[in-house]
Image 1 (cartoon, one colour):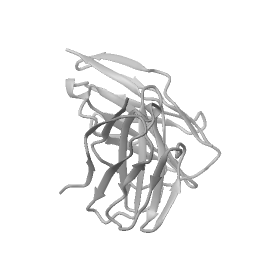
Image 2 (image 1 turned 135 degrees about the vertical axis):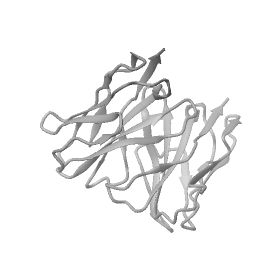
Image 3 (image 1 turned 90 degrees about the horizontal axis):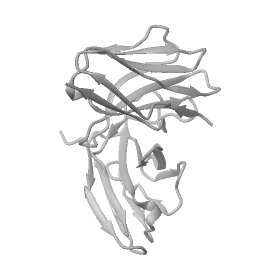
Length: 115
Length: 114
């Protein structure tokens, strides 16, 4: 079975600074996607970014980028120029060739942005 | 543009009571699923459906029932609520079961069982 681990229950960053959230996963599959979801206080789950395992290039969405290290099974999220609106719970998730849309989530990292 | 709609948003039950959490999507998605979110445990899959008439168990199915009579609706039933089912419940849908598909989540239902 696949597992996803987020070892940082809480992180904090100063506004305008950069922060990196860590995620590691374990799988024997070769075809899979990795996702970062944001959950603000409204509770809504919002997709931030996704990465296909076969793509070597790291995904980027505006201020959000990932560092995908396939051999190390690591998938970290970098938030640049942090904004107060980035404060949220962030979840790393895995979807593989056998599980498809049945995502496996990490425990979550609560990000605080200090003004 | 409603997306995935969950009702109710909040619910308090007494132990042993039954209830149904409603989930509806208007995107003609084949795949729908239910997750529960507990502190320090992320989201865990309860049940899922790959199309009308087809359902299957996820990681934590005990105490929950589902059915999928239409493409749009995927209700989650608690037959006899227990305090261990106190949680936040999310419904999600995607185009199909493919890994690459983006999943769309409802706003969640916060359930307390006393």
